[in-house]
Amino acid sequence: MNVPAPQRKPAAVAQRAPEYATVAQLLDLYRKRAASPVEVVQDLFARVEKHESSLHCFVTQTPEVALARAREAEKQLMQGAAAGVLTGIPYGLKDVISTAGILTTGQSKILQHNIPQHDAAVEAKMKQAGGVLLGKLTTYEFAHGGPSWDLPWPPAMNPWREGYLPGSTSSGPGAAVAAGLLPAAIGSDTGGSIRMPAANCGIVGLTPTYGLVSRRGVLPNTFTFDTCGPMTRTVEDAAIVLGAIAGYDDADISSVERAPADYLRDLAFGVRGVRIGWVRNWYDGDERCHPDVPPVVEQALKVLADAGAIVEEIKLSDLLVYQDCKTTISITEMFSAYEHEFRTRPQDFGLMFRNKVLSGSLIRAEDYFQALRQRLWLARELARAFREYDVLATAGWMTPADPARPTELDKFLRPPNITTPFNIGGGPAMNVPCGFSGEGLPLSLQLAAAHFAEPLLFRVGHAYQQMTDWHTRHPTAGMIQ
Amino acid sequence: MTRSFVQPEPGVQTLKDLPPSTPAEIRRMAERAGLHLPDSIMSELCASYPAFEAMVRRLPRGRARFDEPAHHCAEIGRIAALDKAP
Image (cartoon, rainbow over all chains, first blue to last red; front, side):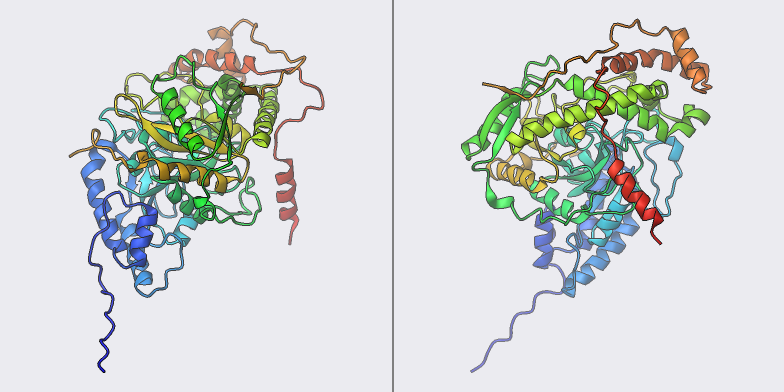
């Protein structure tokens, strides 16, 4: 009896990955040898070339690095020897994250020619996991002052509408992931800088627990609050990327020694019985809140309640109380971090950064100390809420994306951020797209949990994305067709 | 019914009733902080500082003497121990 020879899988890849393929989809395609990391990278750079002139997502593109890493990934995949959890996955880094031999500017004239000798810990982990760096992404100056038109690079723009901003300092990562230029990026968050652009760009942004992801080699904003985390199009992708970058680092004073968690383990558990405290007083009734936000957030919580979550409204201190505490600490620390340059070449900072940080030179030690006391008071308020509720939920941002106003540079002190309280608490918080404004701009639901409860946060966020399709919609109005 | 987690702080005061600093006072404070800024940047500081001053003055004060702030003592101890390691 003749036995037909087994059909060999094709050595070369037969099809291309679809546009907007997620991290999970790409990993699956690679496993099946149905897509090639090299071709994925080439396709993404073609997309970058088409859209970069209008979106300004990149400070530096790294095609040589990307193709070298993609070829190595492809080799490993073909040999069945891919060890990294992100083998062949393209990503970008906010340009405050140091990369050895690659320009790292902080979007500032101060570091316009800065080429670090060492990788930041988070980049070292992405590399070790097999990720493929496509480039360094636009930020506000030193992850704080912006959007600015007086820096060596223009601010990123929102792919959802021409002439609109992506929001806050991880703006390049937000715009690039939303526009399908990358499936994942690493941002940094001190008061909402991952979550705000996630909200305004219709993607997922996770601020991990303070100390879970090393900040070694990340240009400082505020040591007390700085974190780095994933920005992706799905919650599942955020869980995959966090798994690659989380972990103890002896060289980061904030790093917490803990056994690594499996962030994908609980994804499919659903929300039945999960207790959600709905912090409505932070946005509903606030005159700055866009009228489309409260009903969209309420509808998102109804989806979770219908799936078995227990949703109850709770009240926490006003946002201004959190913001006063955070900003006092932030501007003091930021001035200290950049004091030498403020004393020797203040004109080389952008106007926005100077306006927001120079006043830090006049904060007294007593004021800083009182703010640190207040921080503990507010963190305890959040801890009391997390003793009663598994997850807190509120709006991801109070408004859709703002239009760009290049002549409006003097916002000395912005209105309170709805994201900042969870930086005060130090626990994880994640924004998930939950609808659109009447103008067609994305809106977002913010979920937060107790320290190191990222698996629970992913579980709730993933359940929500399984029941809705907001994360599957992609921008057109702000992109070249 | 909405459950509140906000707790009152007895005895806490603020400085928000103090008069705002004048531009001349802000210039003097900056100079005493050792900042020698070009005139245009000093003017920026005089324009931006009042908002931050008001913010700082809203912070609660007068907390109990033993009310310790958030800090990183545990981590500092750990790092110091590492520094001593051979």
